[in-house]
Image 1 (tube, rainbow, N blue to C red):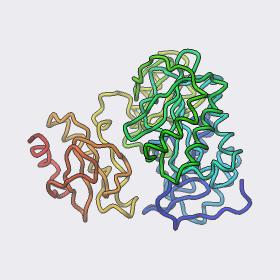
Image 2: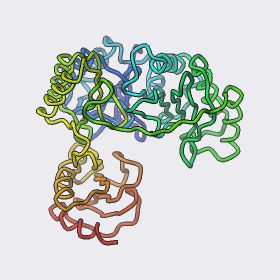
Image 3: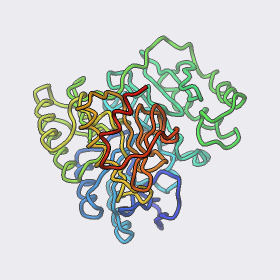
Image 4: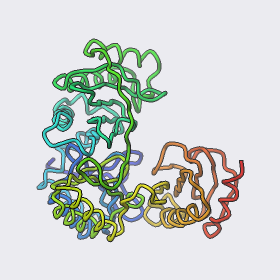
Length: 410
């Protein structure tokens, strides 16, 4: 870990890290990026202990398959960084940490090509100093093509196992464009080529922001390294319950309490798991000994307040922490989202719902069927859009039931 580390709580508009935390309404937020998408059970227990002892006990799972510890005071930061350093969860500097955005298919096996490539890409990002100029939201996904696939999730560079090779996709304004395939041993060279070609263009936030000419330049740089693209489908996504020798368990709105994480690690160990594997759906996956052990794990997880069924109404709602955790919010977004889940179920509303404490829409960037945006203690009602869509009306937080008559109209 770097010899001198400062809390950069005054900087806005970036993703927080261990070495560069972010100030929020409940204190500093520290984002811990798991190596190759996994935490060992001992690491998970240690994170739970640190969140409880040094933070406020709130832990958030993010859409980028990371974990955030909340409610840290400035004076606790050095101790947290030192403890995470002993666990090997801290990068050499804040710049390296910021660009290490690698998502891995959560059920990819230990020793698989997917895990091996992820390790090599992380080493590339740490060793090639030019890559520190990448935007902090520039990301990579590496998928195994299994039933819990992340290939449909948006990332600047996508690798997906297809047979013995990997399909290579680049993000564009229209979505992922699959260009060709490469052998596993060539994957890191392909990734490096794309990243350097991107940096050769004028500065942009993401690969999809490149204009047509620059997009063509990046594709031209990597195309000679690729072979013909085989046919494949990008089906997959979040699956809860038993799946392919594992178990999927979600946290309501991505929020875990420290005691829940500690208990989940114990339940996972009893089921034969060795790791907690993160995903972009705020869902944790564990490889279990057998189906009986998996069912026992799921029963235990449900008992401690976690979600183990795909039909749980809370899963259709995205919500940010809201007030008082976030100073940008004037509403209790997650508390109101729980009420919305009950109301939607009772009213038969089956569309997607996004409850946001403010117009930034941190919990979800894609459109939703129904969007509530906090504004001076009330909610702006928006339909079939993002938080930036046209506002239809304002409602009080205690009048959420009236929204559904509006939502069903038109």
